[in-house]
Image 1 (cartoon, rainbow, N blue to C red):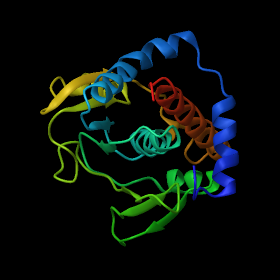
Image 2 (image 1 turned 90 degrees about the vertical axis):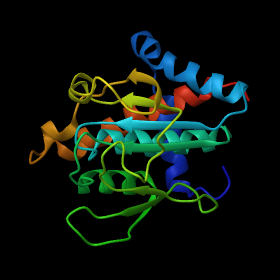
Image 3 (image 1 turned 30 degrees about the horizontal axis):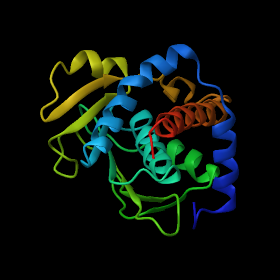
Length: 206
């Protein structure tokens, strides 16, 4: 993709080298089907990644999915994220994505800062901050609600406006917070989520 910095390109090559298990491929297939159907019908593709606090996994999934859609030239894709409650985008996620090669800068200073995340100089930034899934910043109809944690999946029996609800859960890297393993765990989680989102968009017919 033009405009992508060499550091992120190298990281994406690592992402693309990771193997996806048959079990995870089965978990991801409903999302592939949703995107494929929307593309076939020439409709916009809206995906909202939902996790309890909208602080870690849902942001990683949103940013990697938007990047993957651009990498594979799948147009008209808009990725969002939200939670069942508002907290803040966890700083370690920002650090992990910066180390991967994303350009990230803080747009506001508050308890819930707003970040701009760029995967390419030629692309609009992904805006990252913690919000509820039905926040006015997000789309409100015709989207796929991707439940990235089992707690949100179990705690939200109904997602208003969602056309399809798909559980794609990931283990929470929060378990490593405050330990010597934190950087490694967050990097591995970023790689896993990145690999799975790249797999999804690689399966879409151009």
